[in-house]
Image (cartoon, rainbow, N blue to C red; front, side, top):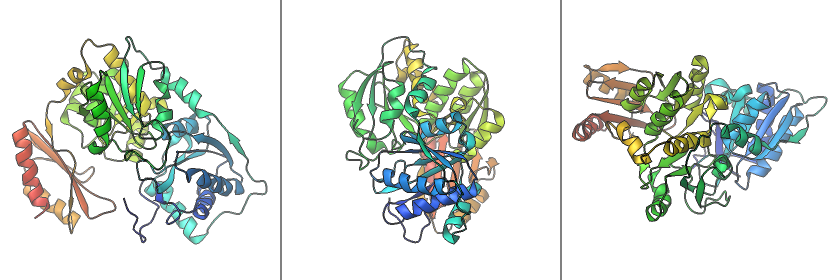
Length: 444
């Protein structure tokens, strides 16, 4: 991923740039000041990932926050789910996680929250913070600066999530940490299962591969390891461990929407409730939620939207096709280790392997997400709407059209002249035929 010099680092969901170029220590100081100006706060929790520049960014960010009287609770190295946990548990006024997630090592950034881990997105504050930074419209420094204290978040988070463990037989799990924060997130599973680690030294330069389980080529190493051994399942974390990919006992990659259905199945056995799934998910997700007594609700893509809808409905769980798994237990935010724990519980209580648990849910045939570069994305959506008039149309996020035996969603990228296609059908042949047909319209 490269940086466009003219592109703002203040994004739709976070602040992200190349350290020393588009994101500097001085800018971190200003962002700290702007955060305290935008969100008058007395206590802010701040966590950071393993990138070598996360430490100097923390110092300058904290200097900006404390200048305006905010007390900073330094979480030290932690996962993003742990930062959300600390925000809610410590009843802070806000939280900042210093990370660039799965981006390469030269990148860094900030994920911002209000109290109770409510995200601050581009539409709900990031653009306001950008304006404050660019115009130096900071509040006056406080008469008494804030103080910095430390909080060891890892033990409390691990204890909280382990409450949900119900593992009834020994399990062997292969885990690809990608030299990233999954090393701390996965402490939830330590002692509960046997862990065979890959790339288990923290290294923010990512010496082995990009920390992004959405890219199947990053899973080659864990697949090779699993195919040589005997494992119950595999886990691959992303850079800040707010996402996870899962593999079955054969080392086969399980689609992330199918994992959503599997976890929903487990949760709904104990508690009926609302479960959200993003609109790119398989029909099977909605069906499994209904079959297990839950109330399925569709959400548009993006963690800020899903979390807001979860809170409004007091939902028990939500899953996104990108591998984000959201739980009411973690303030309606992600917990990739809790997702892993539910998978471990399921396997340990079953007489069949994970591949057999997944098979009944893999009822349809999906295209996967296909990106196309186009000149006028909005015009493409208009053309598709004119062509596919016989289906049920939804415009929750881009354009979704559903027929009796197939459906598709096409969304525009927020930052690039791209449209993203997801399509599913009841047979493989139909999926391929409709995929090519819709792509022909998109790329005409």
